Amino acid sequence: MSSHETKAGPTADPRAIATALTFFRGTAIVAGLAMFVLIVEMVLKYGMDNDVLSWWSPVHGLIFIVFAVATANLGFKVGWSVGRMIVILLLACIPFLAFVEERRVVREVTPLTT
Image (cartoon, rainbow, N blue to C red; front, side, top):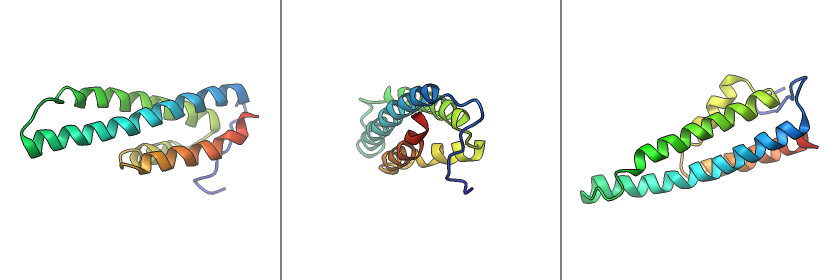
């Protein structure tokens, strides 16, 4: 079994996995969008000396923490290694790739919800 395959744990309930996947999906999309706002904030702050969105950085951090919790929640339910969860979090730090990884995880985990 490769590191990208999902192995459901012995106690993995399809309904619990479906709920965790929905939570993961929502937080992944919000975190991906929040990253674009963070990029705008950085361009404004460092490129134009404008602090209008300076409050966004901590908000983005909180959103990413919720996404990390959602990733761990789903990962433990489907039997991912901690390393796999860390890779997902690292990929989420790259603009656009966050959305690609979210779609890949959804395709991979959806069959476990039936």
